[in-house]
Length: 626
Image (cartoon, rainbow, N blue to C red; front, side, top):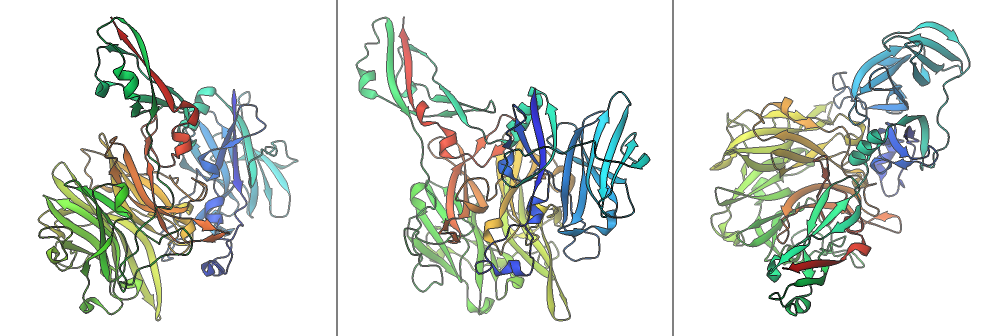
């Protein structure tokens, strides 16, 4: 047997106000992240290993229909997990961030799960007419009933019975009989329940929520004669049961000493080849006078937000967010593109605005024509609109680029009347060309700006005029969980990752003002689905990469994907924030291999240390000649 712990975290941590003045307006906002159900597993029931890097797995959905422009972020405290008559239940208290939720006063919120991976809201269980805390429940098989206990705001404790957790009866004031878990060794944890789970349930949880680690390497034996080029790769096995093939640099001198015309068994040695991506990546300085960042002190060469790399006709091109000038770096190699000279390809004319800026530039090739999708911001951030530039020739020739055209709906009007559109991306599925972007309404009341949440939209475009939508835009996701509403309620930066028939769209969420809190999540659909139907897009309710994912990399987000030219692996290119002496240094580019877990889900947290253990790097191949 194994053990599973449910818990929440204190949620009171704050960043130094001199670094992040935004928090003065929202003290304690980290409850959006920490007041959720976290899980940890153990073999002995004493010391537990946090799942998902000690971040939340179950978050209640916000209320977008309460008359508040941004909606109300909901949090979950006192989560208590139990095995029910069928499946699992979570009982806890829903709140409005750090305040009571008047909609559910005196009620416990319940979630149901059949597999401990995904949870659905089960409803509310009315327990009191006043605020409650620390609700707990167990299922008693002999009685065929649930026992429910809770505390009220005056410190009294109560017990009742329930048949299906829809209502309670036999309510009485009583001392606690259902105890919370003891200290579990998890930093910052406020324990809820500890339950026994099967080894199979534990294995499934780990496959979803523990970063896989390399546990062994296998090299297949081969029969000779064999050419040097046909020597096998190494197969790496990981803790979740997934595998990954890696190239090997075999000892050519030893191989050439083998006389493959003579029967026998021969061995040659090799070393598994790996690619090292330092963080932060060194990037070239922008040309002087272009309004970009010239560099930082120390060994960090400069800022870069929203990096996007594509390969086209043997060249690699890097774009990002910038100033009035759209800058492209180009190189014959993927490694070289970050330090390649930064060249101005287009300067947005002053007619677009005196404080014009360009946001999140992405190159896309449509019917063999290069296009640059970007956002053009004539002044304040509340004015940015998606636009497209077409290239009539060489990408690296500034004279080849046409003036930007703002993206328009089928009726010719801009995408977001009374709002903004940005971070547009493009992809083609079965001959149909789609765009996705972040769309946000902006309300002005009594001279003050009130932005609504930023949502993700999809539409079909004319591939010969990709700024022209030929379908009405459809909203396919909104920020609804604490982790993608923390400090700002934003979804942005969509980018497609294809894997077989699966269509994964990575989306950046959460704070845009406090860069450390940026996160990445995933939408998922299948090839053959009607992608204009919001119902086919599954939004995973937990983050896939956060500031807890990899030590020293805060606020990972706004990424693209590209194939490794040597191995064909999927790589994620993103920005993150390094710290020095406790201070954030700004957004810097990073690259990492995407690992595909045994359950077919992408892992964005595969570090070099977990990817291949040092003790497995030296390998041997046995060649048998008969």
